[in-house]
Image (tube, rainbow, N blue to C red):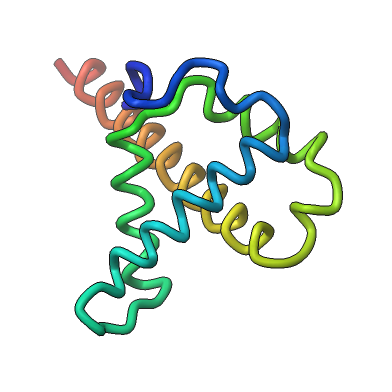
Length: 115
């Protein structure tokens, strides 16, 4: 399901863990601001499905490696504060997308074995 490069972001623009984390935070805060347009309050129940959709549509290259890179080299910035919250939301959404892929693969394997 995760195929093809992300569009509109120059390749190699975000190189350091801090840059990559800042990009994730900017994406998440922008999505939350968009959800709150028109004076409506928005919470995690509104935000999470939108984040999953954006990840699926953007399909960033090397997504799992990027998350591991941030986890290993991100330092204290991923352990507290706003960046930590948004990064946790992002990781959860990516894990959810992976589970969708796994379930789709299992269904395809079952169809192939019964055919």
